Length: 496
Image (cartoon, rainbow, N blue to C red; front, side):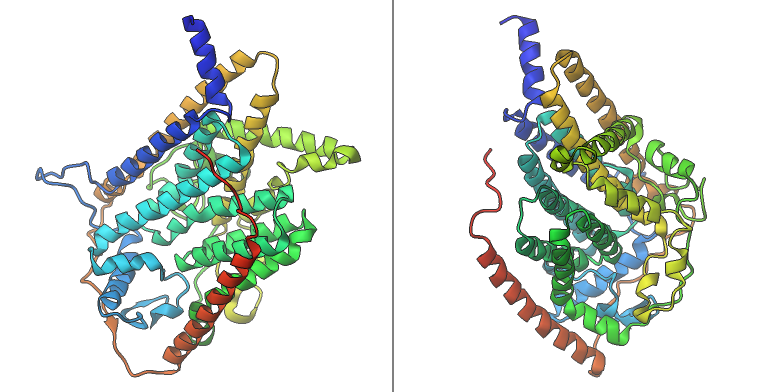
């Protein structure tokens, strides 16, 4: 076999879903991601004294969230729930009542490791869960090595997740659960999952997001999924049921929040102010000191995917608009638009990320101030960006499989585009290393002595937590029972 023939065979293997090279490449990319997060937390760096460089977690949003974990660590070591803490968060010391406090199974690790070590271990654990979710999606959509790599890069290393985790938003590890959501909504769009099973699995994913303290991501996902169900009305009731299931499972947090937590009157902040601001957030790479738009720090806008990533996503969106127009004007081909319908709710979330759009809703006087939980509208762009990424890789894969003319040139161009996209994403991620950010913060460390869980006289708050926990356990048992009954056959067989 000549060199040319070998090169052509490699191109075919790299762009076809029928070769196992994709699993090898994805495995290598997973290890790159692990090394990045270890590198971000300073594991391969040395300080000025020549010793190992470790983050102090004393800057930006780290001090507050580290204190939360220290309270939980103290409670775990005493085999108790962290009912009340020695610190106040959002105006209250009733820790479990605050929706942004993570209460997760993996916190059992705190009995054996330090708070600082737990932060890294939990990040790696959730990152690994996210990778498994990507593998599930790759198998379902039959993506090749090229499109799998593009999906991995755009999902794992876009500016939104990198910047939020870098400045201390520990609850943003729930982001890594989104591949499971996308797997479900794609199956809903393809009509390959029953409404009952969809509701049960959606409820489980939403509950897992709430466990991480990611109330904001929960709201974005709930809004996106509801709007997506409008395109598949057979599943609309399932979306509502899935949300109710997640709330029932989370009742040990929800009940004390409703009864004993008063949402503080925090000022509403800006969303994106113009299309130019959105373009800047997606296209250009800035560090945490940049403040070119609005009154927020840059991590609240950062959605970097780079020039190549944005170009591919934009081309696919334009192609999708054309195809949806053609499909919906030809009734016989109407169902061929399954890959594109998820761009409609993504567009709705993009609109919500503009500052002025949600003002009317925010100012309403509603029970429990639920309309005021999202005082930073720019974060809504998360559930515009993620569906666009997943739709993009699926459409690119279908294009590579169907294209007949100039196929060799197209494959070469696609590989070149992938290399450029990964390079841009990598450069941006290295700008947001945790240890590098700390060295550039001017003010002194704000980290204080470890906080503890306080023992106080039992009140109605304690009773609400215990009652909610009992409801959650019953709901969990029913959920598992219904889920087992729904699995008459495996959801997906993965063969490597």
